[in-house]
Image (cartoon, rainbow, N blue to C red; front, side):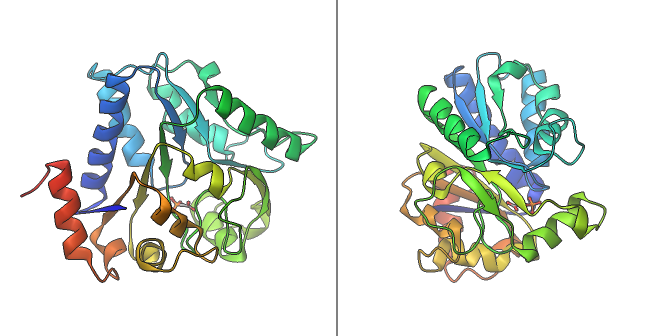
Length: 261
Ligand code: PGA
C-alpha cells in the first residue's frame, strides 16, 4: 500500500488526477470505478481541466460508480447519479451511456446488484477504482461488520454515516438520508487492478490509521486494501497525522511517483 502525504488536498487531488489522466491517455478504453462524496470533487475538476487541455479523452472510457441510495431517482439532487453528472460527466467528453450507477429505484435491488456485477465482469473488470473513506473506515457503503469478501448488495448505513452525509449533503437533516443503499462489495472493489483512495482532514485520521496500520478487519473495511498490490492513498497532513510510519511512507511513495526527492 502506498501512502502519499501531500501538503494539502489541492496537491493530492492534482497528483491523483494526473495519474488517472495519464492512464486514460495511455489506454483510451480504461474502465474506471468512481466515488462520490465531498472528497473527490477537486480531483474531478482537475480531470476535467485535463480534458479541456486535450491531455486525455473519455470518449471510450466506461465508468461504474460505487454506490447509490435506495429509493432515490437519478434525477434527485442528492442521488449519486446526479452528483456524478454535475461534478464530472457533464464536464468531460464521456458518453453518458458509458457511465453506470446502481439504480436506487430498482424493484428488485438485489437483482440490480447482481446485474451490475455481471456488467463490470463483461467490461473486463475495473482498471482504476477511486475511493473515499468514511470516518468509520468504510469504503463505498461497506460499514463496520461487513465481510471483506462481500459482493455488490443492499447495505445498511450506520448512524455515523447518516450523520456525516446529512451534514454534507442533506442540509443537516438526518431524517432525509436514506438508511439503505446499493453498494459494491469489498470483494468487488478489491478486484480492481489499481486503487486510488483520497482522504482529507482530521475527521479521517482514525479511519486512515485503521486502513493503513490497523489489523485487516471487517471493523474497518478499508483495511482490506492492505491485501491489494496496487493501492495508493493520497492524503493531506491532518488525515495522515496518526500514522506511525508517516515519514517513511511519504518518502517512499513520493520517490516512487517521482514527485519529491
Ligand atoms: P466524504 O465521504 O468524501 O464526503 O468524506 C467519503 C465516504 O464516505 O466514503
